[in-house]
Length: 73
Image (cartoon, rainbow, N blue to C red):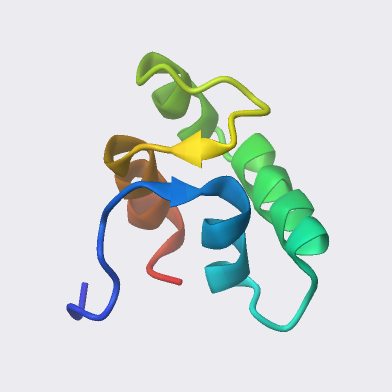
């Protein structure tokens, strides 16, 4: 990580828009959801940390898992 992105709590749509800034919040959220669903590692790791599909808030631990798999937004 280059220090520009901070691991902290994010709203789901907020984090999605960081990954997909040129599309709507709704579309960005759907795309991030797709990435998470298609990953063999991310969803099980998130679930172990208490994540449930539909969560609107991602904890720093959830964000760290996502960033470690997909890179910084």
